[in-house]
Image (tube, rainbow, N blue to C red):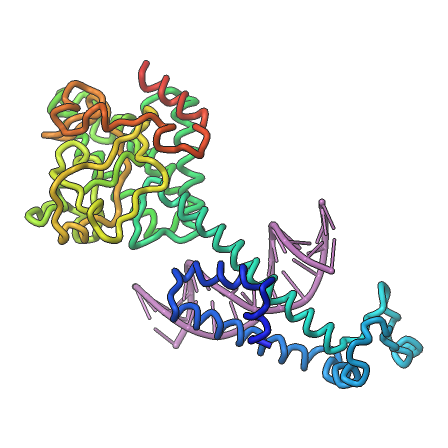
Length: 356
DNA sequence: TAGGCCATCTGGTCCT
DNA sequence: AGGACCAGATGGCCTA
């Protein structure tokens, strides 16, 4: 049966797609074949369990290809203890029908796998645009959805109120309904970056904002997943370093390199490094040391705007941008990076908002 | 070891 | 008939 399945051209696309998810690893393909074998065994065993199918099959063996023979349940139908079943009468499960049924089930399984992989792929894309993203330690599905919902809500509130929110309420909004570990993670990222911001903010503005305030310009979004100076090998000062969390924010302005871009397992974000004004920063160019790769796990996606930069840092849009190494030519319009996606209207609104 | 998370299988339902 | 979608069941893996 399995041999027939894999030699069946009509099934090959499914099987090949199936194996391509496993990156064409022979071992994975073998595993998949084994799984298929197991599933078939399961089906066969379930066939054996179900509704006298074994007896029917044995009968079917006698009139093997006779699909049109109606099943005769006269004994049951005439008995008063069980109601007569409605609907079309069951047909005899001939060997051919069993084979076709198995084939359908295998194809349906393959489709279901495809569907779930697509779903997971979409979820991965979502993970990349919510405030905390890690390639090595992913948020769970449910936490990703919750965080995304909260994030959308928080951004909507900004647009609606047009006010500069405080860090505490922002964190509370983002973490609403999240599990404790995820809450700690998100809050840690946000507070870390706000602290960096405040340091600079207070230097520049004499601490005009309270300790719980931070610029809405530093709202997290995916600007660029750059290494933080705190994550450099020589620095142990980063409070979250031991947890593998690194801030994007300060590295965006003061970072010397972006090791993860040279990391073999680094994947550019599907979503472009979006800044809150709708522009996107490109990868940092610079030296990178392999050991820095470990420094990047979690990152905050902070946009850089005037007045929201940490000490020693620069912003993307002010005059210091050139000094920071983030030049205007490194900021591409959305469509340059997102060729296949429509720009959500919210970006335009945000753009207008933050330029007022 | 219990619990959380995940991938997969499976049968049911709805739709084309 | 067949595909898409869904939810329940199951087993594996990982972590506290």
